Image (cartoon, rainbow, N blue to C red; front, side):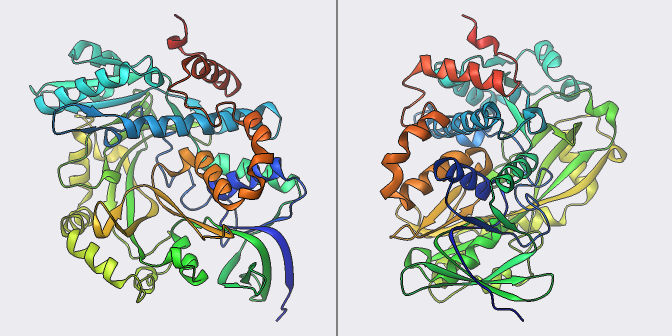
Length: 500
């Protein structure tokens, strides 16, 4: 049993989109830094970042109704949608920089233009969608959005959804052509290939077993080589825990006070995928509906065109499921072992509060294929069972923590970064919008963890992300320029909205 002792500048745990993004940013800023990556599985982007394990929506808040809420006075609050859209624009700029500088090639391998649509039925929801459309269309970020409640127009936009529809209920949709489909699995693999060419050491089939603080404030990791069982010790001044659902356990092992009183609740997703190419060809959009009353935000039904392995696919879902595992390849004991003396009250409070969610998940798990088909038929009235197969998507671990607004044991829907006070270690927890906002989230990590470098880095960050430090909303000309250049570099045809 070897006991290798290794020293490095930065350790990234988990070979997903977050580590890939942080590694790529740091390599541009500090080419001499030694970066080491540990991944439990045999290749990059196999868990939450994998294209079959996420919605690939390029979450730009163009169609996701849960990012816009109706206030008590009936107006629609779009502040969350603005924030997410601006974060997605940052990702697009960084990807464009990578393509322009030949650090990655063939953008069509990971991003394709695709209309984003929202679709609702019933008088109340149609009136909400119209108000949402009015609030968004006044905003430069959402230029080019159209609204229609005319069945003939909708037939043109959504032939598969409107065909054979008999309901007399009002129905309406919004459509914006500047949406995208992003294959985050492919992008993750491209970024790791790029990092490997820059001498980043990537260790697959290596599991981080423990994290301890060294006397000098750096971190020592106990790493197991899953091929031969040997144990290695690796030290670094900075550690990023980007292991998806596996991050919570590692954060707890680090013992940092910021990681206490935090729990995780795993939710799995199941998609239906169409196996009939004739049906697939009749739909060309990502169409998001409204979550049923009582359903959690991650279960918003959507019918998505996806490009996977250069082939057009059609997915519907997600149906929520429950498994105590924190990763698809995790252990059945993940949930139980994540309960610690410092978070047990937080977890119990969440359990009591979230009875309706628990009940919802149990009902979802019990659904038969035919019951799932009934839900699909709300989108595609004439869907045939034999045309659709079930695919189990990735595990998401929703963060549970005590918050001022929600009190003890509040379930958080979103992406959270937990950082040690001295910035020597950071962990990424949570789920959607995740991957789409990776570049913004990692810039935030860098600001918190490398305050001594950030001023010197500013000019280079600005070169990679021209809008860095500026609000696109307040700089419409810059926004227009960025839309045009990213669309050109990433091969997303110029948008009609830009021609005034």
